[in-house]
Image (tube, rainbow over all chains, first blue to last red; front, side, top):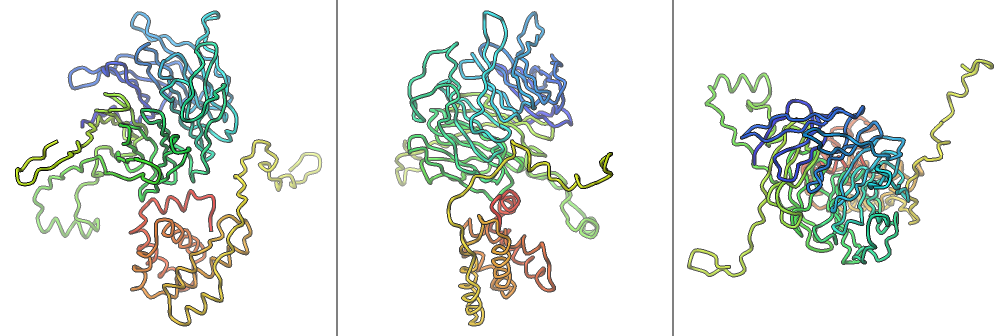
Amino acid sequence: MSLYSFGLEPLSCHAWNKDRTQIAVSPNSSVVIIYEKKGNEWAKIHELTEHSGRITGIDWAPDSNRIVTCASDRNAYVWTLKDKVWKPTLVLVRINRAATFVKWSPLENKFALGSGARLISVCYFEKENDWWLSKHIKKSIRSTVMCLDWHPNNILLAAGSSDFHCRIFSAYIKEIEDKPGPTAWGAKMPFGEMLLETKDCGGWVHSVSFSPSGDHLAWVAHNSSISVADATQGKEMTQLTTDRLPLVSVLYVSPTEMVAAGHDCCPFQFSYKGPGSLKFVKKLDIPKQTSRGSMSAMQHFRNLDKKATDDESNELGCLHQNSITQLCIVSGTKAHVDKYSSVGLDGAMVLWDFKVLPTYTTYTKGCGHPVK
Amino acid sequence: MAKNTLSSRFRKLDIDEFDENKFVDDHDEAVDNQGPDGAEIDNLIRQGDMMTAFHIALRNPPVITKNPAIKERALAIVLRVLTSFKSSDIEPAVKSLDRSGVDLLMKYIYRGFEKPSDNSSAILLQWHEKAFAVGGLGSIVRVLTARKTV
C-alpha cells in the first residue's frame, strides 16, 4: 500500500482514468484537478473550472474517456478531451437543489445523478439535438439521495438516501437501449419502477454497492452498521451493527467480500455468505510500528506530568490521518479486485492491495506444507 | 413586530408544520411496549436479585410511543435499578447482554445523564464505562442516530 498526499485540503471525491495513469480529484472546492503519474510523483496536468459550487461527485468513464462532474451549484457537466483540453458540456438535470453524487452506467451510455431535490436524474445523450437530457425518478424518495450504484445489467440503479432507506429503481431508457431481461430483483422494469425498498435502516445511507453478479446489495448507514439485501433469498436483509464510528463508503471486492471505510480512518473487510451470515473479517490497515527513540527517564516523567501520557506521537496509528470519504476500484473487476484506492479528509490518497486468502482444501499432516 | 399591528405573535408560529414536504417518520403499526413493570422490579430489588431486576427493566422498552409519560415512567424504573447496583456487579450485568441490549442500555444511560441527581452521575459513569467497553463507539453513535428513543 502506498500513500500520496495531494495537499492539505480534504479530498471530497476522486476518479481514475482507464489505465490508472491519471486521477481526477476535487480538493473540497469548485475545481477538479487532474494529476498524471510521473515516476513516483503525481504532476498536475489539467484544472477543470466550470462549476461555481463545491464539487460533490466525479466519475470518469474508462472506455469513452468522458468525465462527469456534479456540484452543489445544481449543475452537472460532461467533459470530453479535445486537443488535449477538457471541454465541458452542460447537462440539463433540472434540479433545484444541490447535486450530491454522480455515476456512469456500466455501458457508459447514461449516468445517474443524485440530488438534494429528493430525486435521481438519469441523463442520456440525445443525438438529434446534440445535448444531454434527463429523466427524473421521484417515487417514494423523501429526502436527499446520498449515493448511487449501477447493477451490472445497466438498467437497475440502487440509491441510498438520508430518509433512512435504500432503494432499487429501474433506470431503463427506451430511447437508447433494448428492453432488459428479468433479474433476481424483478421482471417488470419500466422507467422509475421501484423494485426494492428497505425498511428503516437506522441512519442515513452513506454508500451502496451491488455485488459483482448484482444479486446482492450492500450499504452502510450512519448508525455504524453495514447491511446486505439478498435477491436470491427473497430480498432478505441482514444487518450488522459495528462497535466503531460510522462507515461512509462500501465496495464489493469479490463475490462475498466487501471493503468499507469511514470515520475510523481505515478500511475494514466484511464478508457476506448468506442471510444471517454477515461478518466482520478484519481491519485492513497495518498499524505503523512507531520507532520510538530511547527516552530518558526524565523525559518520560516530564511527559507524564505535562500530557498525562508518555506517548510522543500525535498521529493516528493508520495511514490516513482523517476520515476516508470515498473508495474506488483501481485494478481488477468487482468480482476480483487487486487494488483499490481511498481518499480522505487529510488530503491523502492511499492505494491498497486486496488479497483473498487462498483456501486449502486438504492438509497433509506431517509433511509440513499444505496441499491444495 | 408586524408593521401594522406591532404584534410579535407570528414568531410563535412553527413554519415547519406547514411545509407540505415535511418528513414524517414511517408509521409503525405495531402496538408499542409499555415499559417494565414497576411493582415486579421493586420486589426483586427488595429481595436483592439485581440481575433479574436488570433484565426485566430492559425488557419492553417504550421506543415507538410518543407519549412522554410512558417514557418517563420506564426511565425512572430503569434508573432506579441502575443506581441500586453495586459497582462490582456492573460488569457481569453488562456482559450478560446481547448487542441490542447493550445499545438499549446505552440509550438509558444517556437519558439518565440528562437529569443528574445527587448520586446518579457517579454510578451512571461506571455503567457507561462498562457498556462502552462492550459496545464501543458504535453503541454511542446509535444513541445519537436512533429515531426511536427511550
